[in-house]
Length: 218
Image (tube, rainbow, N blue to C red; front, side, top):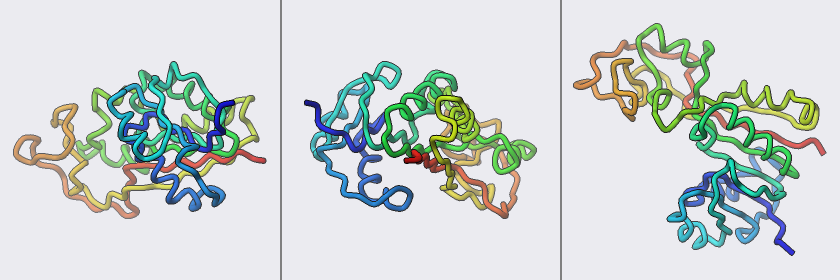
């Protein structure tokens, strides 16, 4: 019989998200003992297997779109859903995470929010977050897309939703804010190459990242 899974981490790379969950899941979910042997890291890159297994976790090579889903208490996707081919694919993966989670889902999303809290405050200044144009971020998956999935009949009223802002950005001086003239895959601002950028303080700050906590109503 397959071992009961407490945590499944999609796009695990070296298993960092599992480590974060083991140390701090009690901030958002019920505090309980998480055993490394009951944690599974899923990644298409087989080169990550040794790092994951060394920490006592299970490893499975698979793309999220092709993963043979297994039931687990929690599913994680940290900085992962944006790497999928498009928003609809990301939604499909989230649906499977919800269907196969006994207790909850924890997403960590880079901010692609177009509302006044983020991108809308940068665009008039000729600025953007660097990651919003990266070629390896084809899915601009936002909190609103999570809400849309949770509003579907299969999930409506079965889960609670909470989003917490991370990576506060207090001014345009932040290195991850670049000019629109910067190359699409530029990671950080380079004044010599990307041209001058406007100086502005944000109060309240912008958030470059969101922790999205989804709990199953038991």
